Structures are given as structure tokens and as C-alpha cells.
Image (tube, rainbow, N blue to C red):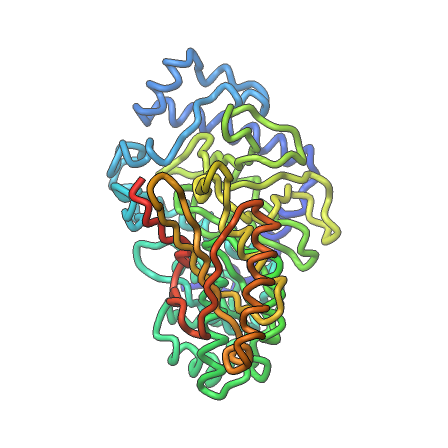
Length: 441
């Protein structure tokens, strides 16, 4: 149960976002040194890796010395399934979460009570950055259960003192009725699912702009500025991007503020680097590369230099909102979402951005990869508005050519475009699955 003292404390917690940079760097160094000593003493896998690299905890004298430490990859987490990377005995662990395991062994993450408290605090700071207050009603449509999204948002909203509607994902008709009847002012879910909610509300004769919703906090999948515009144009909300990973803590690693010029990383808990995804070399501030996180305060499941495969860049300049903590550029693509067609590197986000620039298309699409002999082919199924499907064939063909020209100019390769009716592309109630790779590579 939350006390009035706990509710009042959120002002002090959010003040951490405005720490002077010298105090923040000093805090990070002390926490990094403590972390490295703890994982060396308590996690055999890290101790072995550090010994192989001839690195000892005493070698970490500055923040730059983090480059001496080994990287952690997703395969390391799976190879140590289920509890091999835990730094605390099971009697100290109060929560376990896990990935779905669709691409191999699930990744199991653990939390002590203090880890849960930290998670609540960074989620509280995230919500405050998005303008959420104790007066809001937060409809939480992230999934509950082993997925970290639902409970992470839930605890942060309760710590703030907001009213939480723990509806979880799915059951879209009910989502909309609850949203309307309960007067939800904040929605939290994936951006693709909110687009689905907009479509379903239209079918039900409900205009999203007439509801009390004013804020949307969207994450768990890459999304683009054109998608933000589409969301805001079809509702009365301001859309915010939130970022997190189960391997680091869950949602609440970073969050947009109303300036919308990057996501603020809560770097008193998560130390961020940008590296070249091929060489592993640390890149200067402002250069694009793979973002890497070290958990400075995690007790049960600390992680050294975790390679996220998310492509971003860092900016240490003070934000217009006044926050001094570092910002990361919105993640539009992942290095491991990339696929190669006839020697060209392609990211689904490139296709999405191109589609949303063509009037008459909807932000629902499917990429289908096939192989004819030794030749790869890409087909993009694109939903178009009802108007175009009821219009004459010539108008539909002109639209298809526009879409094809836009995507081909973006990618620099030939694609096949198939225009389909609204609601033809399968909707997702979680992370959108944009690519069907049928090449059997």
C-alpha cells in the first residue's frame, strides 16, 4: 500500500533528472566501481570473462575505463539460462520475468525488492516527463505476466499516485468501451496497437477525438515520426516514446519529454554508450551506432555493457526542458531487424516512413520476402483508404505506382507493391510483426 509520504516523495525522485553533470558523473563512477566488484565476486560468468581479458575491478578508475570491460550479448543470457547470471541468492529475489523464448531459450531476469523500488522510480520519472500527474487515469494496455511492460508501467503510475486501469493487452472492443466509460486520460501500449484501437473505435462509431485521452505513452517497438503524426491526427493525444528492455530493467530506461528531441536516459541507474556495431569501438557523442547499457544499481541481475542491437545516438547537451540527463535519439531500427535484398540493407522502418508520406495509404503493411532460384524478391502489402478501393481502377493503379516509386527511391531497389483493402493486414495486439521471410535461407 502506498503512503502519503511515498506519494509526496515523487518530487524529490524526479529532481534527479536535473542533477549538475559533475555530480552525476561522480555518482555514476562510484556506482560503476561498486557494480564491477560485485559482479566479479558473485557472477562466475563475468569473473571468467574479466579474467580472460586480464581486467580486475581495481582497473576501473574512471568512467572511460568501462571500455575495458567485456560486452554482454543476448546469447550470453541464453547460454546462462535460467539463473546463471544472478548475483543474489534466490531467497533475496522477489520477482522473475522472462522473454517469450520464440527465438531460443527464454531470457530470465530477476529483481530484489530494491530493484522493484528502482523500477518504480524510473517509471515514475518517465511518466512525469510525459506530463502524467496524480490526477490522471492511466489505461495500461501493455501485457501483464512474464512480459515486463504491464507491471513496469503499473508500479510507476501507482507510485505517482495516478489511477491505474490494469486492462492489459487484447480484447480491443472492451478496451475502447472502458476507455470511454472510465474517462481514461492516458493510454500506454505499443504504437501499432493504438492504431488498431483507432480503427476499431471508428468501426464502433466512436471518434477518438471526443474521448478524454490527452496523452499516449508508446513503446516496445520501433516507430517513426510519420506514425506519431498519424496517431495524433486521428486522436486528441500527445504521443510520447518510451524505451526499455527486460534485460536492463523493463520499461523506464528512457523517456521523451514534451520537447520531443530525444529520450532522456535515467543515467544515474543506466550508463549508456554508443559503439560501432561491427567493431565494438566506442563512438563519440553525437555519432550513430548501437546503444549499449550497463546497469549501475541492479542487485539481482546486473548486466555489464549489454549490446541492445538498437541503433541510436547520444546527446549530452542540456535539454530545453531543463533536464541534464543524457538523451538518446528515438530508436527507428535495430541492427538485427535488418534484412538484405540483392545486396541492399533494408530496415522495415524505412518502408514505413516512405508509406506514410503517400496520401491514401494506411500505416498497416506487411513485408514478404521470397526467393526465385537465386534471386530474392520483396513484396510489400499496403492497406489503402476505403476511398481508393471504391474509386476507379485507374486511381488505384496510380496510387500503386506512387507507393512503388517512393519506396524504390528510398531503398534503391525494385519492390513489388500489392495494395489491399482496409483491415486486410493482420493486426497485432503486441509488437507488430512486419516481415514474413519465406526464403528458407
